[in-house]
Image 1 (cartoon, rainbow, N blue to C red):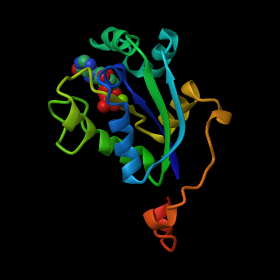
Image 2 (cartoon, rainbow, N blue to C red):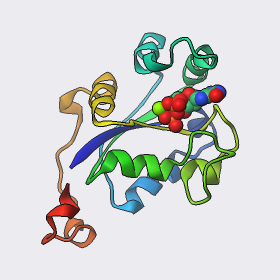
Image 3 (cartoon, helix red, strand yellow):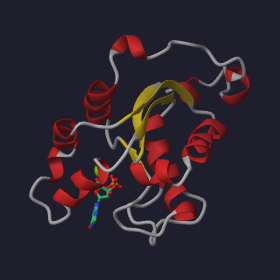
Length: 157
Ligand code: IDP
Ligand code: MG
């Protein structure tokens, strides 16, 4: 099982899409194990987006992500990091495929509604930026045996 960080970005909150975006992950069968609304301090954003420092869009990205509250979500499931990225779609809403969150709900290249960690290393580091270990809930979904084949180890990676 993997746990990954999702952020519903400020445009997602302002456009009242928090419930719809979280539903996309829940209805896929992924599990919410942490949830928090917050205004991200600029210093935290500069750590989170350090890989983009120096790119032309970097300062705009920091301003966008500072512009209002976000909803931080810890999401767990087999191959959750890649599954979340697939559900999000390509970075720019105008390029993202229909059926994806960004493809269905947005048009912009920068205001793209949602963040998802892109590797196990990033997920670990990013989860630690927004959640203390004790803020994550260990719970077993009652329908887990209907979502994942209990006899198929590959289903539980
Ligand atoms: P990702 O969110 O799909 O992983 P990244 O390339 O990691 O995309 O970029 C991080 C964020 O920076 C994007 O989600 C988007 O908000 C913003 N961004 C990326 N590229 C551009 C750009 O060319 N112009 C404006 N904003 C951008
Ligand atoms: Mg990225």
